[in-house]
Image (cartoon, rainbow, N blue to C red):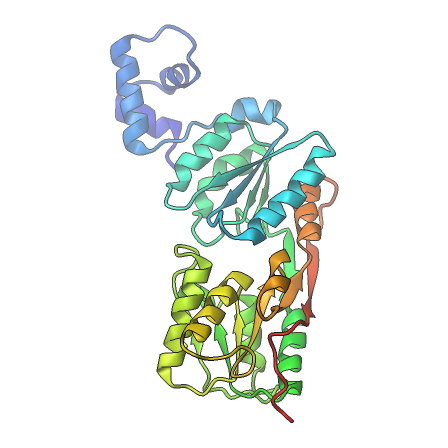
Length: 326
């Protein structure tokens, strides 16, 4: 992060002069102000309003950073956060960072004197950008290496999903991750699948497919990867998708290629979005308690808890898995 001292040296002025320009107090010649503002712009300096004013006068504003505004999962979390925060007279604001320089977004947060930040855009945020908030004591979630205060335990849900597929006779199970490859194998769901597929009797030759989510829409990624899976010729009798939205795209790809779900291939999603029971067929999915997750974020920021909160998962069985063992 660029410091005020570096801005002063670049502009050829004192740090006190830089402070006067930033805060708009005291006399500054127009030429000096021009030089300082030029230095701030060229160095991409974020004025540390938090370290001073914010540390003494935090607002009641909680910021939520997201990349994928279309994904109903994030909107369900925000809805829960708004419910919890409003009961305590706090306000939740959503900041979209897709295709934006996160430093500019953080400058907005500094200007708005946020009291907490919930980062739901973990894949594209530069953690070093949050130093000024850490120094000011702002409550952070998923913004630094040690600020993951809410953990989703996918182990139980994945175990139920894989057991259910096994018990219904499935052996050739693919996994549509959709994340970039370097992130795919860090995801807890993918890791559990790879580490345990032989234990459940699944072939280890089945595909684990990556793409560029969340830069591309989840349903587009699901559709494209399902097409790749079909074209690969790999024998596949079931597919687990990283999200329900990917499952939406993937099932359509199979339908468009003349396959029937679940008669030809079974599907399991993840998230348990409200509308997935209206899929045709209704989607079997790993359910996450999004209300509990959203409440946990707010409770930590408001100081109601200081421990890591674990959110459990379980399988919600519907109609998208067929018993092929009979």
